[in-house]
Image (cartoon, rainbow, N blue to C red; front, side, top):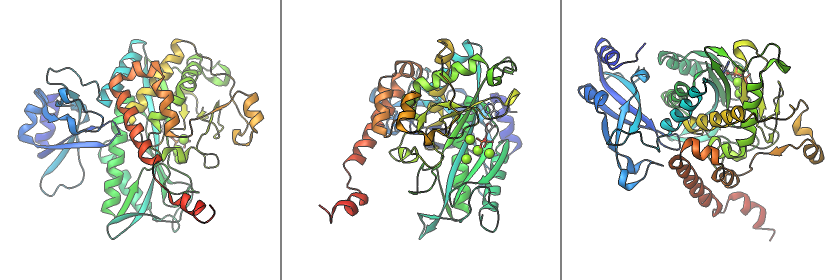
Length: 441
Ligand code: ADP
Ligand code: MG
Ligand code: MG
Ligand code: MG
Ligand code: MG
């Protein structure tokens, strides 16, 4: 286990590491990376490595363009590929200003702030994400949307051609310290899921970013294209990133209550109440692309209606059957295009708001919500998730709690990126419109 500067130096020496990749993510969750030779590691660990933050998406602030990368010792890991020119390790970094204070626009900092808030209430947050992705064929070196295989849910060879590639991804993740629980073919052709064990929120957010680039890298080494785009093919299931959540106090899962209704605690209910209250605003963060909203439609196992339930998979929030240590709340709306740091920060802040203010989540819904009529939805007071990015940002812009918890720098970056994204989309003339109107109008 590596936790201190000394541990890092020892690990570098004993593994004969030659290069370190210093990594952080921009506001969109894209991993940025600067490589240093090991000769610079002393300096990196003591004062940090300077860089120009003004070219990073969501960081821009001209008067604050000088920024410093501070590697987090506990994130040290040897990268299992590309070792021909010497062993390469990576470290995930926090971003500071030259005066040593944390940079407010750093997504990792936003999450750390909310984690600290939880700690002050005596809680630590456990997160277990389920990332789905597609493997597509490449033609002339370019990605296509041709699925690599024609397998369906839980299928195996010969329909599932990706067994070996999935295993390759799993082995690489294990080399990087992941505790893999399962991997399987998903519902759509070419679609897969690999599940890793839940952990504390910060480690898990780091893991999500690592998971994505490992998957992309291994796919590439196998001549394929991996994508976490939420809805690459119309008429097929999209890719989600269900987020499983629980709180623990002194090592005990406090969502479990052997004597409670459904064997869940009041805290679990209030946490759900908080999620339901803020979920429209959270959607701007957990579903940040124009394309994200093409997944959130009825008929493809993705949530649309704002409700919670027991094992019911038509619901936005589900309580999977496991109890005891495994008692958890599953939020099914996020997709893997989101920035995991600010998504977990928003979700945690909303849940804590629920606990603090004892927000009642209302009754759980066990019917298939997709089959309810408009009147049924109205009678039960069931609302819907925002149906476009343009809608969800309006909720985020007005959510005082999330703005306070994540900070105005991060929220303003999310809002202005979303607005630019929406405007760029809005003015396009799509093939659908040509097909629909060219000959009829
Ligand atoms: P599903 O039935 O929704 O497909 P999976 O088995 O694919 O669920 O994934 C469940 C996820 O929940 C895993 O990442 C697992 O580690 C995680 N998980 C299990 N227990 C907890 C817990 N107490 N808190 C948070 N996450 C948990
Ligand atoms: Mg799953
Ligand atoms: Mg599973
Ligand atoms: Mg799945
Ligand atoms: Mg799930």
